[in-house]
Length: 230
Image (cartoon, rainbow, N blue to C red):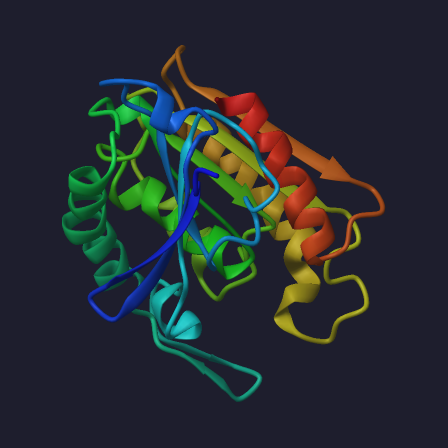
């Protein structure tokens, strides 16, 4: 049996890899790559001609947040810039040495859910020249000052391919800042729509009126996103 799922250790970080079904039967064929936050749970049941690399977080509240903040006595480290720089400058080149990965920016994606979605959305503004595809599953845009940060971003002339999902019931019963998840998402989506000026850009926004902030929904809509973007 050919093993298509492997776990790598790179610079004290675990990376879970899932290869396309026919990866070992094709010669000199390069594949799209999607960097996925929070390990492999989102793509474990996804079958596509894409190489998925799930980075298992060591410090999620630090690496996935764009700047320091304290919310309900929880400290967030705000190290997303350093984390994304590591992904771009170290992880992707390392994966290219290990696997047959496309050199085309349009074939390189980044994805995640919740805080993993937040850092992936942040990557859109910091590394639009590296990634061409983005999957945001319930990104935590309730994070303090994030929507305001988006308002200050320049327009994007290069084409982007984006899928964004949120459930309509996310945060409804919460007393935490995430109670504003849906209205802030709607505001953020409007902002992003205005920034995407290229006629070649593709932006899918999906929702579920019964959707909760749960892995069941994350996995379902991640699969849908992959099928739409690839």
